[in-house]
Length: 275
Image (tube, rainbow, N blue to C red; front, top):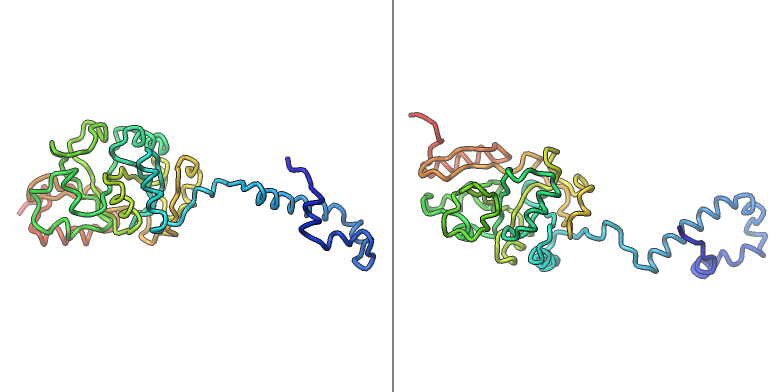
């Protein structure tokens, strides 16, 4: 509970010092409205005390998603923390994909079953080969699809540097290179891959505004605000490219038509299609 400090209030608002002896200010009326005045003073006191004490609310973890804060985000990831970031589709929770503890933390925050796989995010198309097999793909295909609102599912391969504990039991991994400068700066700075999933409780609508997952802010070291994202809630288009010469759309997402067009220009056929 806050205690009213009249000295602090009157020192900062000098006019209040003259009310007691100055009828011209309408002292009689002030007395009749003592309740209103006392309430106003209590509000002022709370505000001034917070300023004096430097009290930080939950919104103190909110940062703009700008280059200025990229190094801070990288340090949080290296420390095994979870952050929330905008992408070119939705807001996501991100952590170091090679940190078992951080990955488990994301599952806890979302209330998600460990049998539901996480995708990874890298800074550039050239980084994908460190984490998944790409040498069976037509030249220029990945560059045509990425960066953009597409998740490509690829085989991990024996040379993948990903922790085996990420998506255990699966020999494939979904990879994103979002068309979003901030998260790509973070991924590059981390020197690793980011585990990435939508910023929401499992089974709930995805988030296009940080307010959409306000109840989960407290579980993040930082929440990076990129404003309201314009792509809608469909998320990325997910395409399986694990089979030579074939593709399979696993989720239509926000860019299915464009994705299929690029795939077919590179002579890939839809898995299961005839003729």
